[in-house]
Picture 1 (cartoon, rainbow, N blue to C red):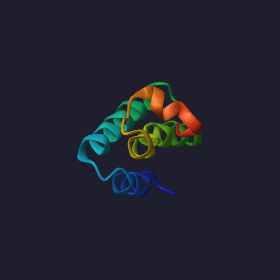
Picture 2: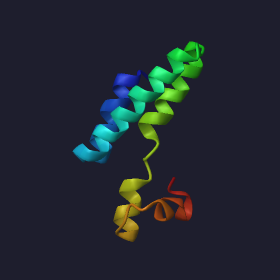
Picture 3: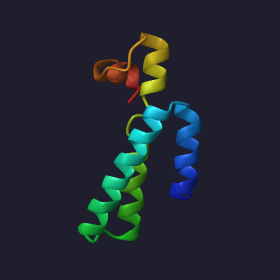
Picture 4: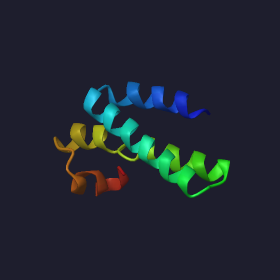
Length: 79
């Protein structure tokens, strides 16, 4: 899967401009770090995908616990 497709899926999943923009910003930083560190293409892909998805536990945490604070994402393996 391409990173652009993953980003599109992430944006649909979050359905929230704040979280979408935050994930894109994290991806941009990760890509810059990956290039600066001369990572392999595979390692760049992994790092960038992780940056895009790093807050994937927020929607279920908000739905289940009514909050997106860090401690709620860690409950029951949501993050």
